[in-house]
Image (cartoon, rainbow, N blue to C red; front, side, top):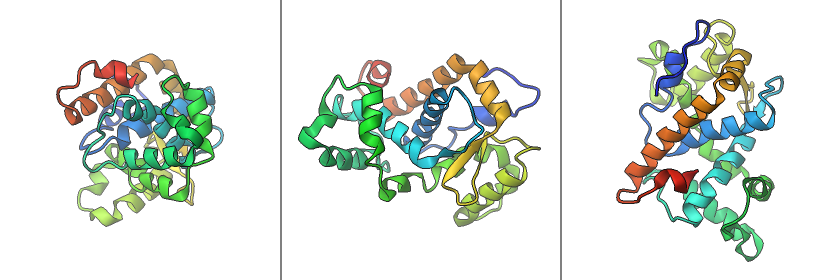
Length: 216
């Protein structure tokens, strides 16, 4: 799917967010970020806690795993965290098939611990790597996260990456121009990201049909 162009924003970099993806984290993180922006009505005047994005990721991944037993990838730890949440809930409420997304979000919210946030050790940084590809060509992998953090902060108003980070790297600040773009192209962006996730999950679950319906 071709994304809507923008004279002010690097939509080509946005279109490459899911390049070189080996697990579900990038898809779920981006979709979770969009979910959180919806709840805020795309108001980005305040940072978005990474912990809150994790809540959206787990709420979105719950039904595909517990209802349809889908696999998320060999290197993926989403299932491990879902099982931890299920163990923490009384009478396995997490397994009820008709739980709404908002109810799931509420159940997850108070149970996301530091070890769960460790899911995001890399993905918030690596997701926006396409905005800084040239600067990262010769950077060692162990230094990439810090380099992206610094570049996103230094170039926030000039390069306009999708987001930057707070100094403690516990929250992200979405660029207001990107918030406007995402809101104006909401349906297209959601379809694009969702289709990419469906494609990944189909590769991780060969032979499973109606994948889009299982993930929707």
